[in-house]
Image (cartoon, rainbow, N blue to C red; front, side):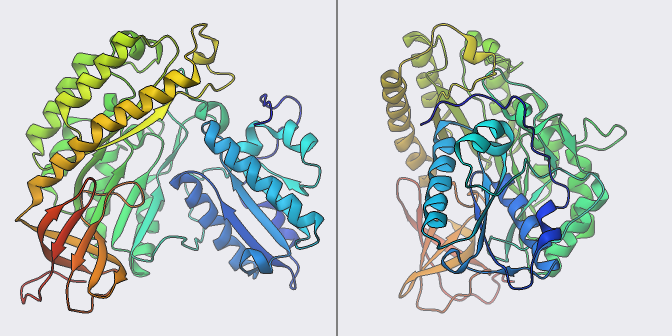
Length: 450
């Protein structure tokens, strides 16, 4: 990957209403490529919605005159994907298969100078989409109509030493409760049955708003003012900000999925301090115990970083033992990515790529049988499943409330019935795999379906 340094002189504007909308021509055909996380996905949906409101013609890539790329710069792999995508589009432009390239998002915000210099073929460069605290914008969903992401805050409140998000996104900012609820009501009217609340740290929601605004208050408003939203899922929770009130509400309100994604990053106290996590090993253990006591069926997802600068063999073994002891339902493992401009990048004892790769593989190998073991608790039980697609004759793919879209497992449902994607059904779990469940479905008169 090319050498990258943060932007110096050229600071592309953040976008409220994308500036290129004012220049749309009636005959111009647009295509959009989204890279990165679900937060980026929401931004892309807003851009598409605004373009359609401006009567832009949205077409597949092979038919486009202009291609818009919403870029990502979170870790090294994401940067490489962005660079590869831009190079491919430039090749298409040189071959006269497309006429114009518009790049925006985290990568162009952070590396604007380099993008402008190294990729002169890119016609327009912008930064990230700005978060409006008080307003909703039309969205054109890139997800199935029954499941949608709703961004409730932007950037991060914590400033971990390894993370560049605050440098890219700016100060932590929350949307106000009313526009969030109104957006969800609109999505409900369009057929949404699952709402995934997202942000870099949704448990910090409202910290910047003052008054009584917080995640628990927001959830109560959503529950009170919607009726057809069957699942509300929380992505992602900073461990320090998980409150007793939130856990109590999750335990008592059946429409909130008993699923919590709490990225812990590590368990060694020394590394947690270096990471600026403001949360200790003891606090972490007590939090997990509290969650499982108050919400016994809660599906716990977390993420860990291996190969953080200075991580010793002993500290890695400590992390491995912690994962074995806790038995999380889902674990994401990331090799440390050295992000320029962060405090962790200045630590002298950087870990080699080989060791990071070995530790990544070892921790993933430890987690695999643990995920399989956790799934076995569902065998023989009835489980509510959201059907999403047909895999083959008599086999459908769905998800339970214990699995988030895209990142977790699925439920393979065997049935002779024709099932409709977007409907909830009751199935009986008959087997489990490493990350997925197998179930059977027979028509029941008392089943829940929407």
